[in-house]
Amino acid sequence: MASMTPDQLAVAMEAAAKASIDSHHNLNLGTFFVASATDTLLCGIMMVQLINYWTWSKEDRWFNKSIVIVTAISSFVATIFIIVLMFRLFVYNFGTYYPFAALNLLTYMSIIDIIPSVATQIFFAERAYKLNNRSMTLLIAISICLLASICGAVGFPPARGARNMATGEGQQKAVAFMYLWLCGSLGADLLITGSIMWSLLRSKTGWKETDDTITRLIAIMVETQLPPTLVVIFFFIVTFGVKDTYLDIFALWVQSKFYTCGLLASLNSRYSLRRTMRSETSSRGRTSRTAPVIHVLTETYVQRDAPSSLTSPTQSRATTLRPTFSHKVHRGIAKDPLDIDDDSIELEEKTPQTPTSHSGQESSSSSAHIDLIDEYSQKLDYIENESRTALTGDLTQGK
Image (cartoon, rainbow, N blue to C red; front, side, top):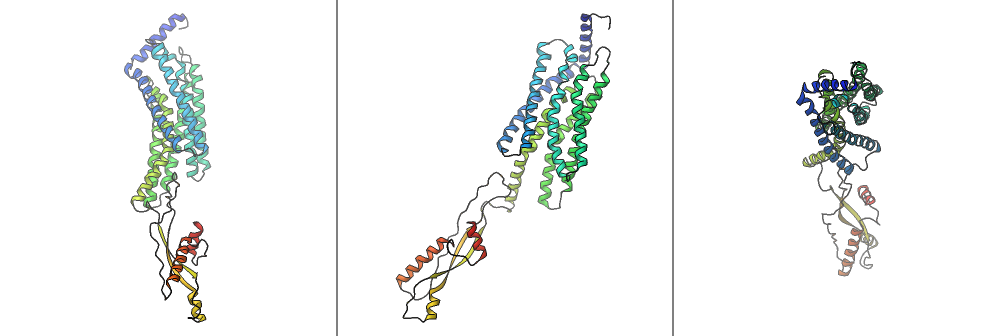
C-alpha cells in the first residue's frame, strides 16, 4: 500500500468499497432510500404535531417550549443534512462506491442526532425526578448517562476521521466513542422509562377512575418512549453485530425524528386525555351539561299601612310586619373541573318564581300596592335587604 501511487490507491479503495457494497448490494443501497423516506415521513408527522402543540399550548411553561424549539430545529437540520448526503452519494458521485466508505459527513450525523435525543431525555428526566420524590440518586444516574452519550457522539466523528483506512489504525478509538454514545443513550432511556412506569404503577389506589387514568398514562408513556428506545437498541445491535452492512444508517438517520415525535406526542396527549376523561365522566352522570339548581326559600318583611280605627296596637303591629315568602332559584356556576380550555360560565334561571300569595281582608287598592312591593322585593333578591339564611347570603354575595 505504501508504494502505490495516489491513482492506484484510489482504484484499490474503489474496488474495496464496491466489494463491501456488493456483499449485500440491495440491502446496503436500499437502506439509504428507506432511511431517507422514513425521515421525510416522520418530518411531516412532526410538522403536524408542532402545529397542534402551538395551537393548544400557547400558555405552556417556557421549559417545555424551549425543549420543543431545540428538538424541532435540530430535527429539521437533520432532514436537510440527509438530503445533502443523498445528493452527494447518488447524484454528484453516481456510479462510484468509494464515497460510501470515505464520506466523513456520514459520521457527523451523530452530533446532529444527539441534540434532540438529549433534549427529549432531559424533558422526561425532569418528570421522572419529580415522580420519584425528587430522587437525587436517579437524577445523578441519568445525568451520568447523558454526559457519556454526549461525549461519545461528539468524539466519534473526529475519531472516525483520524482512522487510517489503509492500516485500520485508530479504529479502536472510534469504536470506543461509539460504545460510549450508544450505551449512554440506552442507559438514560431505560432509567427514565423504568422509573416513570414504576412510579405510576405505585400510584394506583384501587379506585377505578384513578387506576384507569394511571393506566392511560402508562400507555402514553410506552407509546412515546418505547419507539426511540427500540431504535437505540436496534442501532446498537446492527452496529456491533452486523458490521458488514449499512443497516446502522437507518437508525442513525431516523433517531432524531423518533425522539422529537415522541416528545410532541407526549405533550399533545395531555389535551386528548383530558377530553377523554371529561366525556367518560359526563356519560356516567358525574358531570352534567347544565349547572346544578339550588332552591332557596327566602323570607321578607314588607312594611305596609294598616287601618287605624279597626285594629288594636297588637293587631296593627302583626299586620304591619307580615312575612311573605318567595321561591328563588339560583343556578350554580357550570364549570367542568376537567376543562382547562373553556372557562366560560353560564348563569340561567329555568325555574319560574313562585308567586307570593297574601291572605286577609284588605281593600283592592291596598292589595295592588302590596303585590307591587312584593314583586319589587323578589326582583331585588336581597340586594338591599339582608337575608336571614347563610346560604342565601352567600349566593347573594357571589352574585
